[in-house]
Image 1 (cartoon, rainbow, N blue to C red):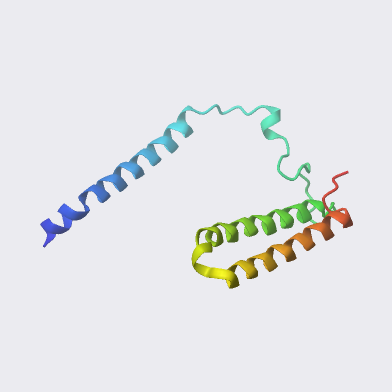
Image 2 (tube, rainbow, N blue to C red):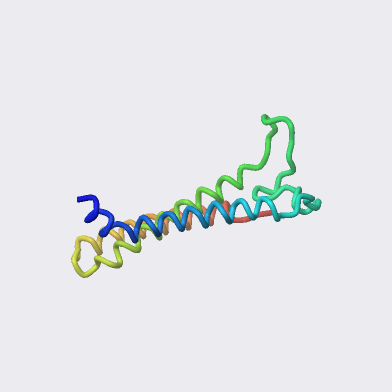
Length: 122
């Protein structure tokens, strides 16, 4: 019983052991060989563009969050389009119509955001 199990699953177990070993080896090599003196560019603020501050209650512009929400909305749209496109031949007219309604609603929302100026970064 154990011999059959090992015969069937030995390549998978070996692959997992090698993958985990290489992953840990790369992390340890990176930790040991990486430079330890970051320059001022590496220590500067990034992603949201704000300098680090001490007061967490400081007011700041909310447009960053609006852009992030718009990205999530359109990212989810693409996530729904892939399975729909693959099964389009099987789902028929009802599936096609429901996706067109979904895309229409998203397009109306995008045009609304565009007209309101949420995409203008000044």
